[in-house]
Image (cartoon, rainbow, N blue to C red; front, side, top):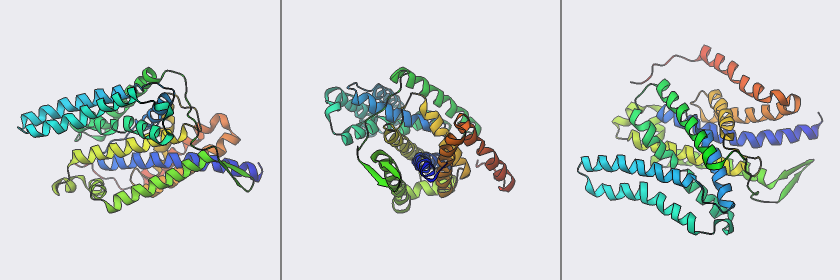
Length: 345
């Protein structure tokens, strides 16, 4: 291996590591706030990429009908709860946010000439379809069992993951899709030729990480999520709604996942089940951070990306084995050095 090849592998590793870092941050956030290990995080990646690809091919994405179905189910639950509590005025807001909004989006996608719209609008529409699935999913699946043990929440997450993969096959088919690059420009850095899409991935990841930092440091909702992550019982006693924190957390997780999918779709072919492997590598990084530390998880994600890139050169057939083997010494080290903490009642 000469220096040029090493730099090319490092570039691939940093690009992949940037995406894994975003997913690792989402996994740490979801677990810290809700105790849910979000196995289905990778499915948001695949849904975001393939929804954009369907729009660009001139089809109404089938995911929008899943959004309508989820919204209708949430509207029924929350509408019945509002009527039972005698809050008739709240019923209109419940129906508007959960049912009228997704139906209006479906109608908009049916009448708009989406393939001829600017790329930024297409990306915005794809995110508008996929991102609301996060809070809807929390309301329907996790909110009723929010106080269940972590093992039960994990089993439910596996079930949600399997359901989303099956629906992905139904919606998108078995064929992979790839979207056009955001930019055809390229940049020469010494012996390297860095593509415009690679720069988009790295810059967008950094902007999103900085944006999340500002959100958690400077906004009331961000501080509420931090308080919930540190002490869920104390946050509840201070008037922070656990259901609102859960919905907001899943909103951010779905946004990060869908945006990651949109960013990598021009670089690699995305299949309906591609998200699982990508999400699993983000999970390895989250484990390196102990499902608690955002900076260590981000650094772990970069390490996973670099290890994957160099492993593909030296032993491509075993690169996945090498990456996932990394989790064993990390878990062993953490089990020997971490203090056991009883789960909150």
